[in-house]
Image 1 (cartoon, rainbow, N blue to C red):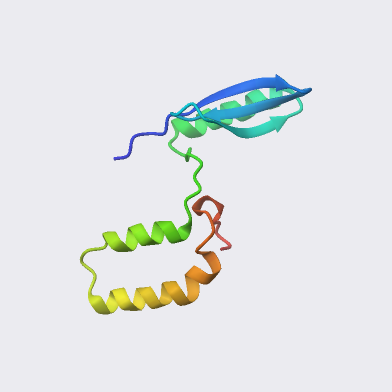
Image 2 (cartoon, rainbow, N blue to C red):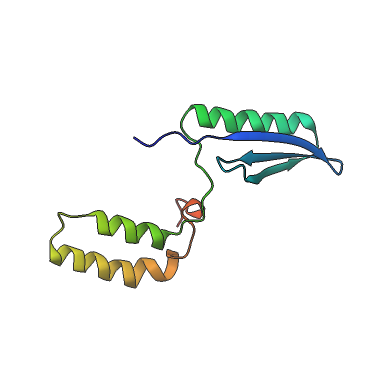
Length: 111
């Protein structure tokens, strides 16, 4: 089982606006939103923390579908050579050209 993502958040008042930032394990800050009021920033922070508690929070990632496919297909050990070849054709002809360079977190039901 994967360990849960450690997420810390910061709320700051800058330039007349309220910013919400995520801080990862390496202390790198990533913007999570800009809000007109402190109340909106706090509500967004609370929603992020609730998602974390419920296991729905996903750490931001730049991983593409092509990266995932390479790792996933290599991990499938009990696949016959014929099935592997068919999957490779489908992947290279239909999926890779259209979705391969999309980030996994950018994919949605319509894709």
